[in-house]
Image (cartoon, rainbow, N blue to C red; front, side, top):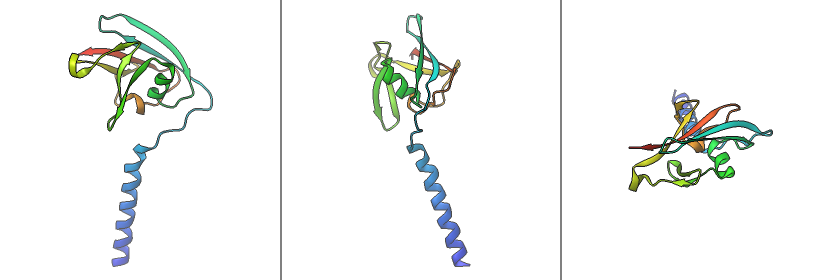
Length: 128
Protein backbone atom coordinates (compact mmCIF):
# COMPACT_ATOMS: atom_id res chain seq x y z
CA UNK A 1 0.00 0.00 0.00
CA UNK A 2 2.77 2.44 0.98
CA UNK A 3 4.78 1.55 -2.13
CA UNK A 4 1.80 2.25 -4.40
CA UNK A 5 1.10 5.58 -2.71
CA UNK A 6 4.75 6.58 -2.83
CA UNK A 7 4.99 5.61 -6.50
CA UNK A 8 1.82 7.57 -7.36
CA UNK A 9 3.05 10.63 -5.46
CA UNK A 10 6.45 10.44 -7.17
CA UNK A 11 4.80 10.19 -10.58
CA UNK A 12 2.57 13.17 -9.80
CA UNK A 13 5.57 15.27 -8.74
CA UNK A 14 7.50 14.25 -11.86
CA UNK A 15 4.59 15.16 -14.15
CA UNK A 16 4.14 18.52 -12.40
CA UNK A 17 7.82 19.26 -12.84
CA UNK A 18 7.70 18.36 -16.54
CA UNK A 19 4.69 20.62 -17.18
CA UNK A 20 6.19 23.53 -15.25
CA UNK A 21 9.47 23.29 -17.15
CA UNK A 22 7.84 22.94 -20.57
CA UNK A 23 7.47 26.73 -20.79
CA UNK A 24 11.24 27.09 -20.43
CA UNK A 25 12.07 25.38 -23.69
CA UNK A 26 12.16 27.32 -26.95
CA UNK A 27 10.88 25.54 -30.06
CA UNK A 28 13.46 24.74 -32.73
CA UNK A 29 13.83 27.07 -35.68
CA UNK A 30 12.35 26.03 -39.04
CA UNK A 31 14.29 24.22 -41.78
CA UNK A 32 12.64 26.23 -44.56
CA UNK A 33 11.55 29.88 -44.46
CA UNK A 34 8.04 30.77 -43.32
CA UNK A 35 6.33 33.83 -44.89
CA UNK A 36 4.28 36.22 -42.75
CA UNK A 37 3.07 39.82 -42.68
CA UNK A 38 3.52 42.50 -40.04
CA UNK A 39 1.32 45.59 -39.97
CA UNK A 40 2.63 48.45 -37.83
CA UNK A 41 0.04 51.00 -36.70
CA UNK A 42 1.59 54.17 -35.32
CA UNK A 43 -0.03 56.37 -32.69
CA UNK A 44 -1.17 58.86 -35.37
CA UNK A 45 -3.00 56.03 -37.18
CA UNK A 46 -0.56 55.66 -40.07
CA UNK A 47 0.15 52.09 -41.10
CA UNK A 48 3.10 50.32 -42.66
CA UNK A 49 3.04 46.76 -43.93
CA UNK A 50 6.10 44.52 -43.96
CA UNK A 51 6.37 41.14 -45.70
CA UNK A 52 8.95 38.81 -44.18
CA UNK A 53 10.32 35.30 -44.45
CA UNK A 54 12.13 33.70 -41.55
CA UNK A 55 13.45 30.42 -40.25
CA UNK A 56 13.08 31.68 -36.67
CA UNK A 57 10.31 29.88 -34.79
CA UNK A 58 9.14 32.79 -32.63
CA UNK A 59 7.87 36.17 -33.73
CA UNK A 60 10.09 38.03 -31.28
CA UNK A 61 13.26 36.38 -32.61
CA UNK A 62 12.19 36.95 -36.23
CA UNK A 63 11.38 40.64 -35.74
CA UNK A 64 14.54 41.28 -33.70
CA UNK A 65 16.57 39.63 -36.48
CA UNK A 66 14.85 41.78 -39.14
CA UNK A 67 15.47 44.93 -37.07
CA UNK A 68 11.80 45.90 -36.94
CA UNK A 69 11.61 45.82 -33.14
CA UNK A 70 13.78 46.36 -30.11
CA UNK A 71 13.18 45.98 -26.42
CA UNK A 72 14.38 44.19 -23.34
CA UNK A 73 13.85 40.83 -21.72
CA UNK A 74 12.83 40.47 -18.10
CA UNK A 75 11.13 37.78 -16.04
CA UNK A 76 7.94 38.22 -18.08
CA UNK A 77 9.66 37.84 -21.45
CA UNK A 78 10.37 40.33 -24.22
CA UNK A 79 8.97 43.83 -23.71
CA UNK A 80 8.84 45.65 -27.04
CA UNK A 81 9.79 49.31 -26.67
CA UNK A 82 10.64 50.22 -30.26
CA UNK A 83 8.83 49.36 -33.49
CA UNK A 84 9.81 50.72 -36.91
CA UNK A 85 12.23 53.11 -35.20
CA UNK A 86 9.59 54.58 -32.85
CA UNK A 87 10.31 54.24 -29.12
CA UNK A 88 7.70 54.41 -26.35
CA UNK A 89 8.33 54.13 -22.63
CA UNK A 90 5.15 52.96 -20.94
CA UNK A 91 6.26 54.46 -17.63
CA UNK A 92 6.62 58.01 -18.97
CA UNK A 93 4.19 58.19 -21.90
CA UNK A 94 1.49 55.60 -21.13
CA UNK A 95 1.97 54.22 -24.65
CA UNK A 96 2.80 50.59 -25.37
CA UNK A 97 2.93 48.29 -28.40
CA UNK A 98 -0.02 45.86 -28.59
CA UNK A 99 0.37 42.57 -30.46
CA UNK A 100 -2.50 41.26 -32.56
CA UNK A 101 -2.64 38.02 -34.53
CA UNK A 102 -4.97 38.05 -37.53
CA UNK A 103 -6.79 41.01 -35.97
CA UNK A 104 -7.23 39.47 -32.51
CA UNK A 105 -5.29 40.46 -29.41
CA UNK A 106 -2.52 37.93 -28.82
CA UNK A 107 -2.70 35.70 -25.78
CA UNK A 108 1.09 35.28 -25.87
CA UNK A 109 4.01 37.68 -25.97
CA UNK A 110 6.10 38.15 -29.10
CA UNK A 111 8.87 35.92 -27.75
CA UNK A 112 6.46 33.02 -27.22
CA UNK A 113 4.28 33.52 -30.32
CA UNK A 114 5.05 30.85 -32.91
CA UNK A 115 5.47 32.22 -36.45
CA UNK A 116 2.93 30.61 -38.77
CA UNK A 117 2.85 30.72 -42.56
CA UNK A 118 0.51 33.38 -43.96
CA UNK A 119 -0.36 34.91 -40.60
CA UNK A 120 -0.79 38.67 -40.20
CA UNK A 121 0.75 40.06 -37.02
CA UNK A 122 0.02 43.65 -36.03
CA UNK A 123 1.99 45.88 -33.71
CA UNK A 124 -0.24 48.75 -32.65
CA UNK A 125 0.86 51.79 -30.65
CA UNK A 126 -1.72 51.98 -27.86
CA UNK A 127 -2.30 54.94 -25.52
CA UNK A 128 -3.74 54.24 -22.09
